[in-house]
Length: 123
Image (cartoon, rainbow, N blue to C red):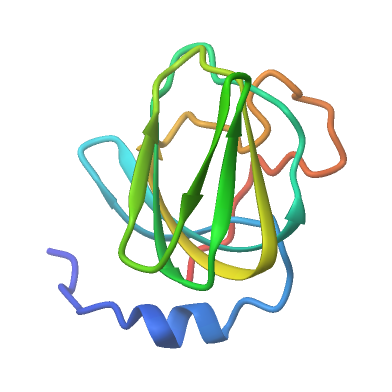
């Protein structure tokens, strides 16, 4: 049986020194809990088969959608349904927790993008 341990989000986020590079903090039922620091703008993209959940732990970021911009502050979250084009933008550094199927690639339909991560580090 695997050892069951608590996860300190503050500790895990302190290990992350780059942006837009998600790490795995936990897994359950085919889903992954991912942590990443956001700063600046990401690319427009969508996920054909997966919904995504974003929760701001610290900082702030904007989720740009084709028809509006949603500003997210600490303790706020958003779910992006599969197929919806979106672009995260972080004017200031943000610590973000994501919850999504393990099959989710961070750049969605932009598979060969320089920011694409397929072999994620575990924290």
